[in-house]
Amino acid sequence: MSGEDIMFCYLGAVGSIVVINAVQWGLSRNLIYALFTLHILPSLINATIFSLELTKLERSLTYDVTLAVAHICYVALVDRFFDLRQRIPRLHQWFRSFQILLAIQMLVDIGIDFSQTNRNTNSLLWFATILTGLFFVGICLISLWVAAQRKDIVGRLFLMGSFLMFLDEARAVISFSGLLWEAQPDSPTAIKNWLLIPMEIVITLDLLCFSLCFLFWQRQLAVKQAIEQTRVEEQLVHERGQRHREALEAELVHQQLEQEKTDVQLRALQAQVNPHFLFNSLNSLSALIEDDPPRASQFVDELSVVYRYLLKANDQQLTTLANELAFIQAYYHLLKTRYGTGLTLNVEVDTEFHPCLLPPLSLQLLVENAVKHNVVLPSRPLLVDIYTDAAGHLIVRNNLQRKNTRTISNGVGLTAILHQYHQLKQPPPEITEAEGQFSIRLPLIIPATDNGVPV
Image 1: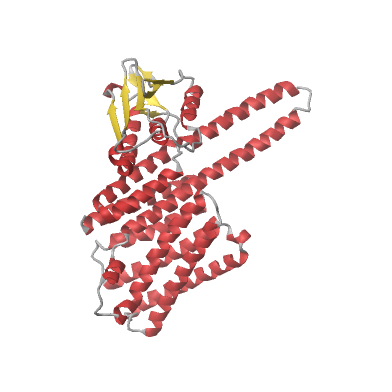
Image 2: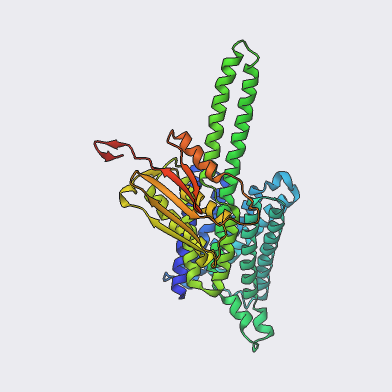
């Protein structure tokens, strides 16, 4: 893959992440998304200015300002995201002081740019720049420690993103210092070439980890709010139970609570992807980056499609079969990269059923369920068929070759689909197991029409 292809993929990935988080910022009005968007934006700007005809002064000013803004926003992001003001007040004061130092450094850099002074020839300026860089590397290490204290998927994703940022910042400091060049000018250039390798893929993974971190974090907040709301309403039920109309009012509130609990569960399940799948995907991508860069770029694109669909599906009760089929192809590409010839997906769906509706992520849950509970090996391939019948049903079928070891499962895959069809007041899916085949028969929902035209 050429440098232009890598840059094109990089701009597309970073641009998508910027847009998604900017939309989240606009919808939620949460300062976390604002800080993260401002942290990402400089990366997109710096990658874009290389294609513009700018003067040396303009390039230097743009780089210095955007880099300082990115660093300041990251420090503020860690401070606010982990609530250091309440949890670790002294560390909060250190972070505030470092933000001031970064702002001063930015002003000094702007003055240097206008004075046309070369940082590499001025030992004092060179030392100050290296010192600031080392301070930020230290901030990254402290962020790793803070994130490690949180023992959940949010903490792990933030830890991964901060570690990738630490690698990029350490590389930048070493490259700018030039110590390796001066100490061994005639030595093999393996280390130098490593330092000069474009870090677009690393930065993309870094931003993807942070985006997924905030996605899971927002979901946790929604669950906590729902639990708190449920707790308050249960207290209301208890108080009303002491009144004369205790039985009638308690039953009514109980039904409302059950409905709200079901809605919360369904919204959470609509955007659920097993965290192990994310880590397996990142491991597969790590291997592809070294062995097959073109496939690595395609893998990143498919991974972006998968999680972009998840963000949309979270707010939808129904989606078209065409959208589900397009999504399952991207999801299958990720699984295919991991399992190779051990997994085959055949899709034979009549196009007349594409406008029909079904709950989002139904196909993903069924395919994931098949992979989770069956042996998937090149010597024993798992075959998954998706097709429709004349009665307007979507059938997902796979050959049965169950694993000998017990599979850890949260038991929500098929249950989630059954609950969704029950909530939509639709006929329940039919589950059959016969002759070494396991199949699910999903009723397709015909969209409402207006004068014969689908609404």
